[in-house]
Image 1: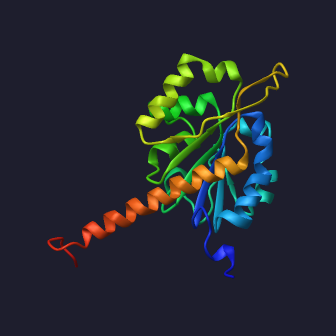
Image 2: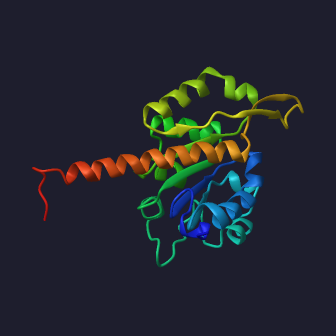
Length: 210
């Protein structure tokens, strides 16, 4: 049997954007699992609000790499993070995705690292919402979700679970990881087939080769 790491399920390079939901506290373990089983390289961006729930240093320990935030800090490999980090990636996963980042993605707002990287990204962009049920049901958020989809972004519908604000069961929590993974594999697979079809079309008679 071949080593799974030689054929990562989600691709060679995955970029994860963590935004400011309490669900961000679960992300270090998810990132570690992605590194071990799902992708060759996982890099992480965090918003300022996400850092209220998880410190960048903690996330860095689980990611095994630099964690990029809204500061002027860069390293030798990455000089312009919102451009360099989305180059040649297989997937940009925004998880958890707040109402704020969904609104920014829907309207092309670029006022922080993650929102700017979304606009610059040519790979599949996937948002995994996590918010209070009343926010998820609001017409503003529902409209922004549809606008995100019209831009070609993928939005994974949230599940029903415990709401921290009132301890009631309601829609708005991140779905089980198995469900998220199933959809991510479909999205990545479709993108690979689309790239393959485009490459094949470029090789057809009449196309210019050098």
